[in-house]
Length: 42
Image (spheres, rainbow, N blue to C red):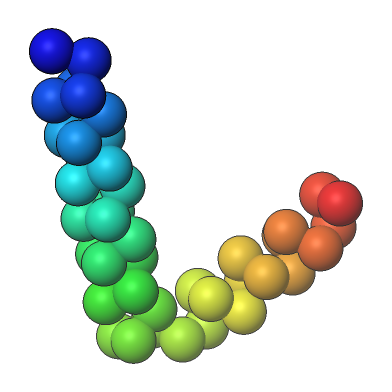
């Protein structure tokens, strides 16, 4: 049961990453904004 849950989590993460990538393709300025936020947080 645990393995099944992990697989589902992995699948959801991949889906989210895919959607994020698609979003960045459509709106590159979002990626830049995110990068700036990211470097500021570190």
